[in-house]
Length: 503
Ligand code: ZN
Image (cartoon, rainbow, N blue to C red; front, side, top):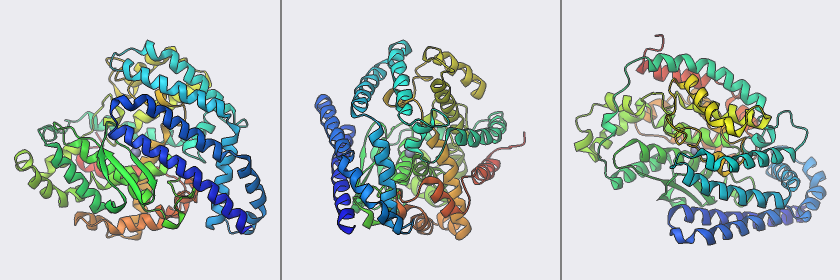
């Protein structure tokens, strides 16, 4: 059995090597590659993806899994070996259900669709991408139908990023959250908006990036196993547990962008760097779901990085980096500016309070499209109507309406948005549990110390990688299933101090 288990691990390590090499090509493409490299890079990436898929779906892997089934049964559920076999079987069974030709067709289609979207969005031309999006919807339905027996057609798509959640669970959680959020958004936006002009000044890029990276390291980001580079759309990527990279971007006329996107990607990186080193090279050495991953980026970016306590410590340092711009701006003004709530068009620029309404809108459209309740050609209008109902503003064009997010133009329709809001909810749930265990965490943060929080997260979440599913690890780490209570309590306390929530 040990020999067979080792053979399986060796094969999986090869798959991992190929995928990691593909990841490195993507990182290079998004950071340093000259534009002229695009066509060849697409070929190279496609070849590596195909090789990884072929190696992973090799029937020999299936035979090894079958042969190892009795061994798995003899092991404790939470042993590394049983966990590895469980996760690999799940992924293997999913992978062999989807024909390789289908995957190749979809990859071709989405890269074309993405290309067209990059031109259609600035031109505000939904008609150009419409036929691509119609095809994408067809592919999305087909992809779901490789997994018959679902309750909702979106379930298989949600499973692929947030395993263990179903459309009906997400709908229930979102409905509860919506009911609580809408009155808060109305109360806040009926009041005088915060003045955030202090953030809109000239801030040299180099100083912004240095400050962000300094904070990232204070959070616990290990630069011996990481680095930061510039890109257009910031992301975190990992080639091994010894090489977990973040990317960022800076706007010299707005301080909020580089800093908070750096802290966001740092949260993702802390999760990956915190995985137990002896899981390296195995399928367990990665975060467990989109929602749990996002919980860490949002925890470090928002719950820590936009807190009063954090800035109590860091604002004087930021002022000394930018004395001309911020020297005369009081902490309270700055704190209100970075937590300004307003009804706005763009999801990625949205504040903590309105952000989830953006996600719910997209999630509901995904379900309606998949169910056949909504046609692609009616989507721009549906978007405008729903946006007006939820936000009280009508998007002036499709560019900042239905065309704004890349997701549907670069992947399936379905399963792509719920993780962001699940992340907000779970971030607060993990944080409040950590504070219950260590009540000194808030005062630590006020003193620029993060190791108690970071250690709790490593101990209770990060170290396990994907050994446990999201529902399992949430229950294990926090003692309850996913709940919106800690998140709502967090928002009420924080924004109740900034605004009158009863009005
Ligand atoms: Zn993220």
